[in-house]
Amino acid sequence: MNRKAFIAGNWKMFKTRAEAQATVRELVRLVGDGREVDLVVCPPFTVLWAVREVVRGTAVQLGAQNVHWEEQGAYTGEVSVSMLLDCGCRYAIVGHSERRQFFHESDEAINLKLKKVLSTELLPILCVGESLEQREADQVQEVVLGQLERAMKELTAPQASRVIIAYEPVWAIGTGKTATPELAQEVHCILRRWLSNHYSDALAAQTRILYGGSVKPENARRLMAQEDIDGALVGGASLDPQLFAKIVKETLTNIN
Ligand code: PGA
Image (cartoon, rainbow, N blue to C red; front, side, top):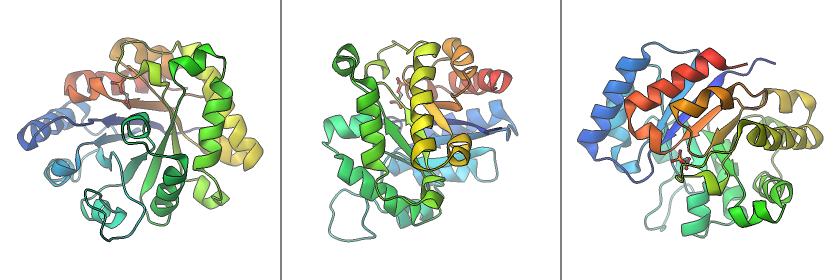
């Protein structure tokens, strides 16, 4: 199965408008027309419009870092799918570990968000991953499959087939510690097997599963060479267009 490589940059709470536009301008210049890969940036909400102005008509696509499950209403501080679509977003990250950890986002909320996103043309990037304590207690499989199962509860096969999954071990995010390619591959394989058992071999074979957690140009090549790793969700290194473009290049030369 030939899955198109997918690289997303999660900018988190970084960059003003001028910084954001300069970053994507440089990124567009560096990656050129690289459409062999789905290349996405996920800036803060405040600069989505500004980034869209720069990336429109280029190979760089737009995603959001979070979304609410209601269409509209009295939800102070939240942003809806219609608002994201209006800004030109194609993707939304759902269930990032920082949302789970710092904002107490539950599996139930993540499930509602996924369902809402999938009722529109937006595509969700669903994050799962274990903490260091859970890894040390040998609970990786139980944790990631539990998160996946609860997040995807009641999704039909057509809905599930549109989910992009990101495996992000919490201990590897922003720490400089990357999972070894073998260790990441093992979890990706477990996730794909779950999709196969719960949906079908065909759905499992076409689903893109990204790795995230301290991805850098130096480690991207070996990670992407793994059979079940189809791309990356990049935090820190995506803030620098030179580094991010290098990761794209490494991915393209090594994707299986
Ligand atoms: P990192 O972040 O690349 O800075 O480790 C990854 C993420 O949180 O998506």
